[in-house]
Image (cartoon, helix red, strand yellow):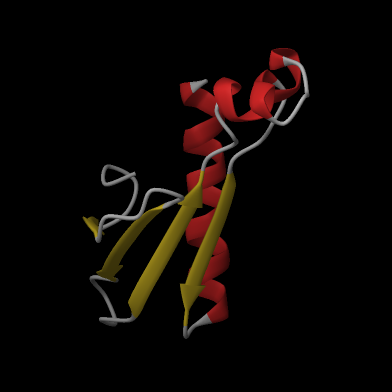
Length: 85
C-alpha cells in the first residue's frame, strides 16, 4: 500500500487497516480504508464453509476531496492488489 501511494498506516483497528497521506503535487489529503474479508474461523463460527471465505473480496475505500485524484488512486490500488494475489 505504501509503495503505491504516499501514505502511512494510522490507528489500530481490528476490523480494518487505515492509511493517511497527501498528494505530492497539490497536498490533497487522502484517507484509505482497507477492510479484509472475514477470516476462516469467523466464517466457520457463523456456520458457513471455509471456501466461502476464500472467495471473499477485500473492500478498499479512498476518501479524497478531489474526485479525480481519488479515482486514479483507487484504480492504481486495485491493479496493485490484484497483482499481489
